[in-house]
Length: 361
Image (tube, rainbow, N blue to C red):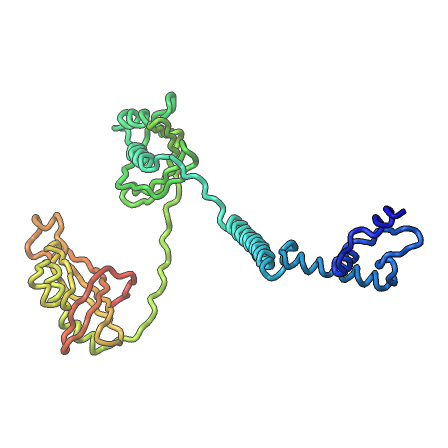
């Protein structure tokens, strides 16, 4: 009994240690009939002690750094992700708008300007020259030269074709001139060459010649077609305009000397009638001055654009055999000129062809 009593008492402890132990761990069950100091406390006191213990442990853990800190240092990651997301959205939207715009412009341009067809490889220059050779043989015929004409045409026609191309061997026709008026290419090998020709000294005609080419060779595939020559157009009437009579009078007295120098082509003489720095090339004696027919000068400032009609003496092939007293041949021509006045004298700045018919003087 004495021994058991000693064991129950245990080793004496300080009051502080007992309080600490009671706060950390629940009290051990004692012997029946006895209550420990912790068990003798009221339930409210026990709950308060447990809450205080948990709070003290939480404060100790925070001070020791066991719980991560969730302050502003972690927010920058969120903001970076937000910026990246907005950038992706903006890029996708921008590229989408560009795709719509480019798609619309491509569609519009595609409908407005279709792709051009590839250029034909037909040799137009050689075909035109070949048609001219054919026209020279075909448009000239007479019974005296029928065999020569047939030989020339046979070389340009398919084998077995009629070498006279339907001519019955009667009558005479002479061609004075011909040139290419047009060509209608109908593929890489075929074309119609239209010739404009003068026959029998007075008649103008057009002739359509079918030409075929392959491997650098040419042939007239069939009989040509006679077409009507172009008709003369009606030129518009020149608009009426006011005239500076004073300028016209001065120019009529000063321009004859210029046109004499212009006909001779002498640069030393021409420079006396030119505006300083102007360059005019003369006719080098191909004609001689006859007379100044008319001058038209509109009102204006010191620089004017005028029209001058000049008559030239033109040499002919019959002059050497003609009587010396016979009149020389002359031609009337119209010029557009730019002139400038300086101290009452008109100087020439430029001279060229005129696009209008000045009418009677």
